[in-house]
Image (cartoon, helix red, strand yellow):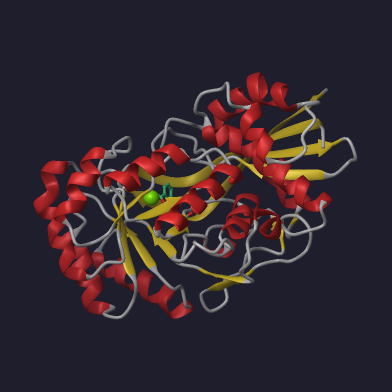
Length: 369
Ligand code: OSB
Ligand code: MG
């Protein structure tokens, strides 16, 4: 396979409702949709999951555009590729910028799956025909509102409820939720809002039998998480701290994490995501697929990845309609009684809705050999 043309589009989509975390609120999503065409005319799509502000990590959709235009697209155009795993090697001279790299890599995987006439899930080695899904709920205006929002999703059948926490919105909130929903799998995601000095406060969460606490400490930390885990009975799950297979290995060896949240963009693509999955499976460490408020293409890639066997815990890949009035794929990703039925047609299994894409496009640029 040889990529001969790449088109970048800046898309802008409004979320149905704002999503608040310990580091900020999302309402408008600006992102890059990438279209790649190979020498046989097969078209593949990738979605950059970087946000417009560098709150979650250092990348933004504009830094991704710069990296893609000035470095990554020139490296990939015309390069003979036998397998998508080779994209990681092609980009190896470029440090970090994992979300930018992943945008092209996802499109190459899509083309590869189509040309080998299999679903992306099958191309990755996935076996599940349906995947369990949970939902991530942002910080609300009041605990009463949160309880009602959670109730709605529990009634829809989501298999695990994740709520965002931050200092001042933590122990009492989790106590109320546990009392209201004694039998629901509940977890908390702090997005790095605490420090090791908060250990006593975080220990209070042990009382509520949470499935896990996600990324309590600094976004670049592994060592303090290991210290904290020794004090907590609740399993720690790292998100922001894991960018590579090496990070995963170090975190598991140090005891900093008992579960890993895998996000394709954060680790630089599906190939590394699969390597982390395989390593964790060998170590007996369960993984789940995180979310970045994706539009349809990113969501389709998450669905495919989640079919790998060690994605034991429900992920954050909720249905399209939870985020968007109109998603950019046809059909949209649908959650039915807490599961997504994995498409079986060749490639990502969802078609791009060109009309929707045109409606959301702010800017577009094509790069040729
Ligand atoms: O930490 O998982 C996170 C959203 C934006 C930035 C970071 C995170 C999240 C979520 C939402 O939790 C997951 C989703 O519904 O896509
Ligand atoms: Mg997280």
